[in-house]
Image (spheres, rainbow, N blue to C red):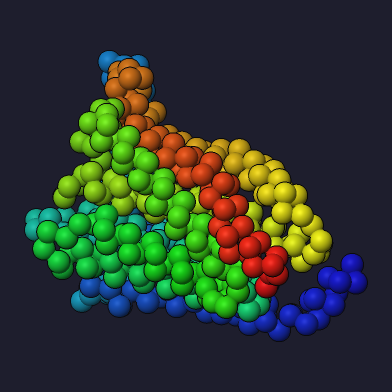
Length: 371
């Protein structure tokens, strides 16, 4: 309790400033409709009527509704004027969603004097929320939080830059570009967070890059031997270039994240053991590393699988409820993601021996001194 009081005494002014900032950002984005070119309205009245019910041959039932909406323009030459339009939706929310009072909507004109909903405005909610989350990180984590945000924005910038390069360079290989992206982000991220002069940093960097290389090489070799049988590239969404290279680029980024997570935890544990017990033997360190990797392996694999399932669940349910069998649903929605998850799992497994090898080569053979 004393710790909490002491902490609040030191940081209350920062939390107050964050609270004022969030309120200010929320107010700004709630009343800045004039900055948008598309017609923007605020809904002042909604009347909802049930119009019927529908069903299909697969036994799916939905209720349909119609809404009479009154709204006020927030921008354009019609600012402060009132308009009326309708919105139709059903309980599946597949095409449209219900409109609520106070919501801000972008409208489109059909040329015949009728307005219809283009899409809803969401930045009034997520931008203030993002400011609160980022501000909380800075207050709670201090310098480490600032470095984390720096690396986050840096990686987003690098990602956009390499996508731009892929667009600007004719016939560029997106996989090759993302190999350079992976090397650059790994070195810069770990270097900024842990220090470029730290031996621990370079052990982790070596582990991440070596494991990613071995994992992708092994995967490519297996695909080549099997002539890509069972890999349904045609079901990748919105592919405008060679699907194989794009698939490998996507897989590389996924493997990189999984391997970096495990390598950081395992290596940090080994260095902590070495600092606390300078007389610990090499065999004990290796055994501790294996045990640590084994404990992380199961949890991290399950996390990857659950993230994959959560992402694919809506489309899988949609396919199954419309008469498709499990086999077709798997091929159309789950096969590509499942293969990427399995490749990431291979990377997680390989992280343990490769990480221990890098740790041994970079530290144990140099007299056992760590930094």
